[in-house]
Length: 446
Image 1 (cartoon, rainbow, N blue to C red):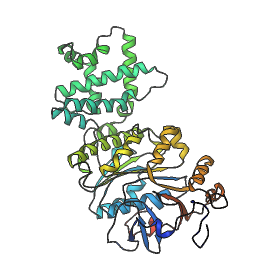
Image 2 (image 1 turned 90 degrees about the vertical axis):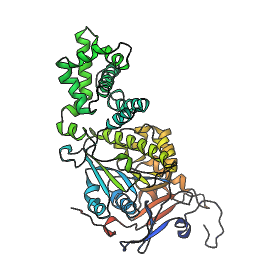
Image 3 (image 1 turned 180 degrees about the horizontal axis):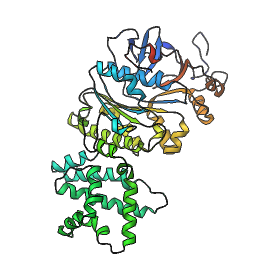
Image 4 (image 1 turned 60 degrees about the vertical axis):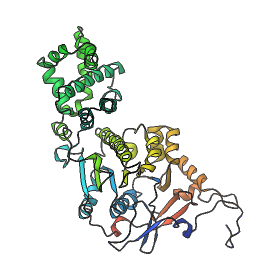
């Protein structure tokens, strides 16, 4: 690109003034002022510039690239200063440990669901509560839909190693029948009560007694009949075994079952008053990760319902900050979620170690669509050649037909450098974005 402003191609790097033109600024050294929530994309002396628009973000950086210190924690800071709500996937509990006191000082309703140590979880969440509330309101169709979504996550959508999917289907039907029976007799519905009916009340004949009183054309009877009317004990035992394997995580952990037997917060208020929900999951194993995915799906659907009550948009913006996004089970409707979220005042910030992770999890078409739906693409570092080639092509070429950002240049970015594609702006290599240590934030980095 020539200094006099003439150019031989349309590809170039962004100028500072156009990059920050639609960004909001705040003073890094001040603890008060006007803020909008969003990722910090540029720094000029003590001024930080954030994108407070409704576009989603995709952050890609391998281990050691400082994703958390450079983007995730500063994002929490800017959202908190703007009094926006957050739902945060928190591997290891690192984020709540570092930001929890600050959020308390800012007057946040703070919710911690600790699946890493359920016996120590400050808060509880019963995923079946939404089903029961809809049923009690007389909204049986809604209750049925919510129950189907839950059973898909807990039974139909999971597999038992070495077993045909048929057994999942039958075990799921038994679970559906038990859930509907619990609702019908007005008992509290939770995984704890489901397990009680499966073990104690199936064994002592209570389940059979209720089953015998049901009309044969009722939904509950039809759901249970495939199991209750069996005479082949071997088949019955196999169904019970599949059921127990699918619910074994809860049966083996009394603390987890208790944690998920009631709800200690209002999901509906997340989009009405400033709330920070931390989903603490183990980083060394993925056993509990499907529960975080289940929570995100249910929370998102609840927020859409609430947005409809406010004319289509939530009063308080909700930010889903999804650390280690591809270590969680698939969010089956992620593309639709991204598309519908923006008009509802909901924003997603997706954090990955590598793009290939997302392709492995979601497949290339969905992964590409997710990336296309994110207005900010933030690249820190990776050794993934195919993605580096994509970034290089995305940046374009100079007047000499050479890449503005070659694969080699991208491979050897300094730790102080970040490549950012911001909405419709030209790309920019941003230098010296502040780490969380520089923010006026009460934190604990032990």
